[in-house]
Image 1 (cartoon, rainbow, N blue to C red):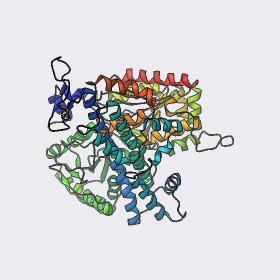
Image 2: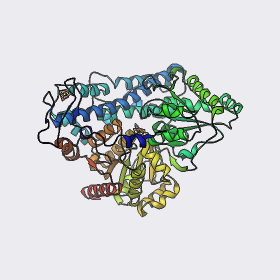
Image 3: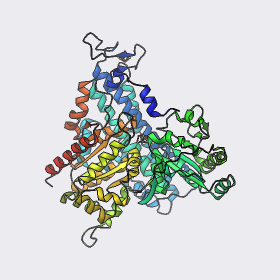
Image 4: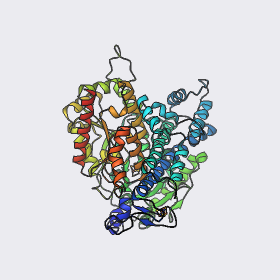
Length: 605
Ligand code: SF4
Ligand code: SF4
């Protein structure tokens, strides 16, 4: 039986040309590669493309792919919102709907929710292909940030347009200037963070509810021996939300009991797991590198997947067990899997059909179960709204208005909390699994740096107990005091990968409150175990938003010294943020703390 670690071992040594980003297959005169180690090797592609051009084009295409993945997810949510109106289904957060409509200048009668939903959904859909203007959420950024973007001509216009433009300009015989290629890539990345991802998050909250703090269980120990276990894996909350409803249907539970099971146990994996844990407290079974291991327990009746980060290996692995791998999206089919197309209009019926497949599979278990005992508990659900509500709890309402970030700014200004860092991203065989996330988070909170996290980093942190009440004991004195007052853990789960847009929103609110730019804040970000193109898009929009980003794994760019310098140094001169590469988590923490202290000095706080 093979897993990701075995395949990674079999792949060694990995190709140096690809690793350095100096291999090009953009036309059929190629493949071309630049030979760096020998003086006699080719230094240009057949068309004359240099190492700078090749590496920048490859990186830009990856960033565009990452932006496309997040943004297409956002589009699906906007379409789901429109479908909700057609189906006359209830909207969970009407307050947020109204606030967003107001922010976007959409007028509607107070009592006409349907009309308002339709207008907001259509306006969101327009963001993908409008011919003029720029993305609406750009207005959330501080003025100084927008000025920088304008001066660089990277203000994202329409989401799809920015992605198309990268693909166009990186076609053979088009853009050969690595700096200009990166400009297009930055614009595509910004159209993700301040566009597609932000739309995905905001509209998901409107549709399914804005997360609020509550406790959940995490790790593979959440699988139950006596129940029908369904793992939902992927990204889009439309499917997982319908699954939450379907598994709670009395008819489904009755059916499970008839098969000899105690109940139906729905658990989440990767980002879709984050979405339903944030909103419904569904247990978080695991992150990217646990998807295969979940099947190996022998206790999974169905692994239900939609899009993104689903290893194609699952289908072969599932065949070694009774597990049914069920694909649901026309965008992501896997040979050997059962395909049940998810139809948004008939979402609950579809979800019930999937649940039935799982339930009838319970009897096919072989009995050799290997469910690990390990599971932990932690608090999740820290949307921006939940954080502000928590801060309201320590606001003196006689002296100050509620609903602001003032208490957070006060804590940072006083130095009780030195700053904040986001730990995001995936798992990668190139670095020790989960260890980098956890070591980094522990070291940061020990030094009074508040940690916010999303994606598979959030899974790693909750499994390590960093979101439990006890975790406060691991924090430095200042952070521990602040967490004690606010009754929060020192590591805050802010959601899925698209929910990194929540972090952008929060830092904009703090920057606006302090009347500074995002680049001036004592904040940083890290993706210690990143692997996906989506993570490259996230890293790029964070840097272009003025944030220092430490990567634990190097992007495939080192074949171009110019591009490497651009990412790790020149970008700071332009945007105030830059990439840094540091695989050692403790050293990465040291760099982040150093960066935060330098920003504090500059702010004279
Ligand atoms: S675009 Fe240029 S470098 Fe790339 S494969 Fe074609 S000829 Fe080679
Ligand atoms: S953090 Fe990475 S691996 Fe995990 S769900 Fe997001 S993109 Fe996929």
